[in-house]
Amino acid sequence: MKKIFFIFGGLIWILASLAPAQEAGSKISVQAGISFFPNPADSPKVLVEFPFAVNRNDFAFMPIDSQVSGVRAAIYAEIIVTDTLGKPVDSSSTYFYTMAPDTVSARMSKIRLFNKLLLDLEPGIYKGKLNVIDVTSKRNGAMLYDRIEVPAVVKDRLSLSSLELAIQIRVVDESYKGNPRLVKNDREVIPNPMGIFSEEDTLLYTYAELYGLAYDSARKDQFKINYLITQAGVPALNDSNGYRHDFGDIAMDKPGPSAVLTNVLPFRGNPGRYDIALTATDVESGETVTATRRFIVVPKTGYQPPAVVYRMKSPLDTASITTISNLVHYLLSPSELAVFNSLNDSGKIRYAGQFFRDHDPTPGTGENEYLNQAFARYDYALEHFSNDPEVKSGWRSDRGRVLMQYGFWDQRDEEIVPEKELGPIIENTNTKTRIAPIMGRPWERWYYRNIQSGILFIFEDVSGFGDFRLVHSTATGEIYNKEWDTYIKDHNLEIY
Image 1 (cartoon, rainbow, N blue to C red):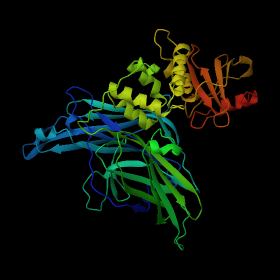
Image 2: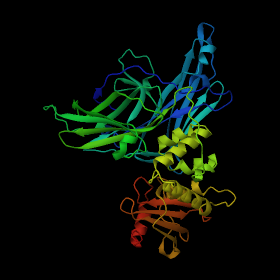
Image 3: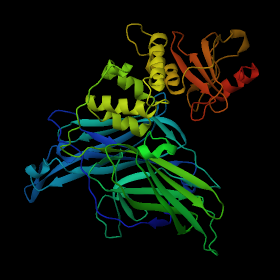
Image 4: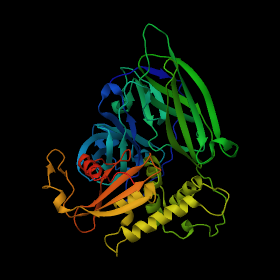
């Protein structure tokens, strides 16, 4: 990535360790996140960072050699990104060591190792898997990215990168001897990949990049930034019931057409979920842009929550952990899902419960309509979209995913492509995908009137055995197929 100008706030050392020791033979615990940096100077591709953290005591240490004291562990990490159908797109890997004075020190449970993998990706939707392998013991761990939405590069107007949370940020120079992967714009950024903080932490380090400032070197124009932290699930007009802190506007001189924004914010909150928003305003152009990030505060070590009496109030009370995991799979954001997957069963149950309480449209009543709708969609997907009646996996299908994320359609039609209307099937030699609808195959059209001013989803039975795949949609961020779009318009099927 091209070097850009920076704005830097004061930094204070902080290190939060939340990782318990792993049992022998268990999977390596991997905490991983994702950040996007759509710098117009790097267009058309977007720099995608995959920061991750592992516990040092998860790895097997061996003596370095007879001439050097101490022990060492070797670690291999890789990120593999595919398209939504599983076809490989790109990958990146790193091989690094961690050392300790002796095996006793190596087993210390409060030391984490931080690293990062990077890829340049075209805007689009992908899947990914980050693997970490202990080279000595061959134990491994992984983090799955079920949906990676790489944003488009914005030109000629103000835009922000992802808002990245960090454990520490510090200035470095040419004498720096640490991990070069963690350095950008002369700053070492130790990431907090999943945005998890302890109740005892008092500071938040942030990193973001601002692009598209209206800059004139002959003038001393300014821009403003503002940080706002709120408690997740608390309405903006009812912040008396939760945490809310506005750090106020900060005016800064423009260093150029872009700027790096790093800061450290004082914060102390009770265990729970919070949102931090960074808003930047170009005073000259009047443009404003905001980036947000969810983070979680967990109880301090040794904290015992008060006993809670549970009563039968919702379907969650009798749902299995598998059902709960399936239910929230498509409802959580990628960062929330990563946090959810890192929890044990009891933690997942509490997390899901809090998530649905935060989204309850009528809090304080005895019914959670959002939760009821989620279960209705899930049950329908199992009943109607499972190819094998013995294996209820309909929620995993393309139709199940769309139903869970967008809700029930306003209109649904089942069609069959008449053979006489189409010529021969044509293959796209560049993407190896079929261009035209398959003659005589069933397909479904779902229409939503009140989402994005009206959107369509087209599912086609590509195998002829009831395996309906999403082949085209007009929804933002979903798969788009030009040939299907032409077919729909030619037959006046795009509007109800």
